[in-house]
Image (cartoon, rainbow, N blue to C red; front, side, top):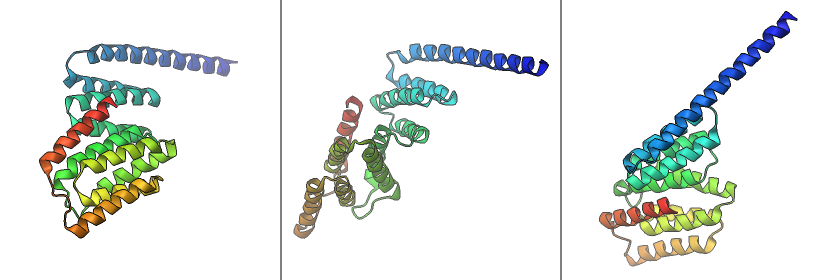
Length: 217
């Protein structure tokens, strides 16, 4: 009898503690929501990312992903791309099947690495970003959107090796005509000796437009 009473009291105490913790969490999130409403876009990503961290610590992954997604939008709007990359990685670590975070990570990573890429090279990091994004999109049934985004990436870069990789992935996603068209254009450029010249300023402008579309889209 005493053992049962003790077990009941312990269980009641645990439930009361959980209720207090949940109430504290909700209060902190409400405060962060108020702070995120500030007109300053520079603060919005930081505040919402902190809210996501709180939810993640409490074990509420879906809610954490929602906050991280909003933080990602905030960082992208403010042009804080390194912070946006970090949030993408948080989202992927928290939920490996996410698609949007992998797409944005690929956009950001390629945009960051483009000035350093040689025409004959694709870094292992870039390759893994592309392949992981394509796999996640396929598993989620989002191949059409992935194909659309990949074609935009191919149009935005002058780096032949990146365009060739995108062509391979388009084939894998079932966009045979698009993949063939991209590969053929690369081959024709090579035969004619008219490979795209590396126009870093132009690439940066095109990539800025893509990043802007990623925020609004």
